Length: 180
Image (cartoon, rainbow, N blue to C red):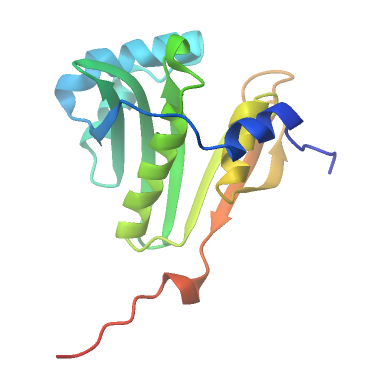
C-alpha cells in the first residue's frame, strides 16, 4: 500500500487541540431537514445525499444524525449507522459548512458520534474518506482510525477512498459492575 500519511501541516493541525468551540451538538429531527439539505449541498454539491436518504438517517431506528449549531443556525452534521448485532458503528458523513471548516466542528461531531457508539456498546467504528482529503484523514488518524483498504473510484472515476476503521479494545471497553 502506498504511503498515505497526511501532510505535516494536517498532522500539526489536529495534534494541537487549541480551538475554542462555541457550538452545541444535538440529535437532529425532521424539522432540521431543510438545513441538513443545505449542508449537503454546500459540502457535496451533486454528490449530496438526496432528501429521502437524509430523512431516512433522521427517522430510522438503526441510524442517527447529529447537528452542530450556533444560535439558530446548523453549521455541521454527522450521519451514522448502527449495527448492534455486529457491534459496529459506521459514520456515513461528517459535513461542516465551508465557511466554518477548520474551527474544530468536524472533530467535535466525530467525538459525539463515538460517544453515541460507546453508549450502545459498539466496538468497531468505520468510515470512508476521499483519499485526497488529507485534513480529514489526519483528524481520523489522530482519533485512532487506521486505513484498512483503498477503494478505487468510490467517489467517481479516478477518485478513490480510504476505508478507515477504529477498533476498541474489548478489555478496556468492559465496565465492571459491583453487586450491591
